[in-house]
Amino acid sequence: RIKEIYYDLDIDWIAYDSKNGGDVYAQEFTESYMHEERGVEFRGFTSAVEEELQVANINKVNALSDKTIDVNAIPCLIPVTASSDFNSLIWQDLKVRLQRGDIRFLIGEFELEEMNESTKAKRMAWSKYTSEEKMRIKLPHVQTEFLCEEMINLTAHYKEGKVKLTEPRSGFKDRAVSLAYANYIATLLENKLAREHNDIDYNDINDWTLVI
Image (cartoon, rainbow, N blue to C red):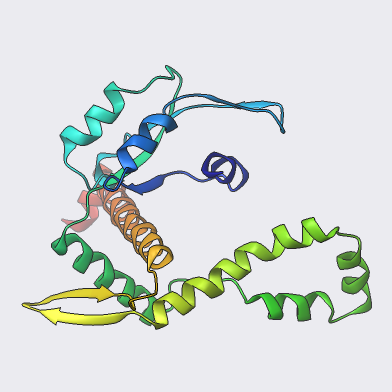
């Protein structure tokens, strides 16, 4: 399913938790996969080549590359080895992004239905989908609602300048953690692009002449 999403949404990188069996699944990612239903072969995945985006120990990143099975594997994997320091960092970064409005979430399932029923043309277009197709369209919006519910129910604990978020006894925070990982990688990418932009700005000798 992850490979389907990678191709369908034209994703660049995949961050995954290397603990709790994550490395085992990552090893399976490195194999090519024939998708019987689609009749296409999905290439294997291997470590992303952008060092600025890697957050794990370089030895872990290289080990994943060395164990890659598909010789034509796509370099897109970013293993994450979480720690209290790292977790605090990603939660604080996510908080800043949310406060600044940098992240746009999908609308909820019922808002989606209302939107598709708002005009005659939209109702006719929506009615042409099968029940299964409607379910697939709604699924990301439903998952977004679950994500927001997870985040609302998290409790923050502060100690020595670090923050730890815990879920209720019967709750989860898997979606929230996934969002925090993705957001942090996006922050690293933004910083990387900003540095490259600054290098380009001042690489031209004419720019230096103007400054002088």
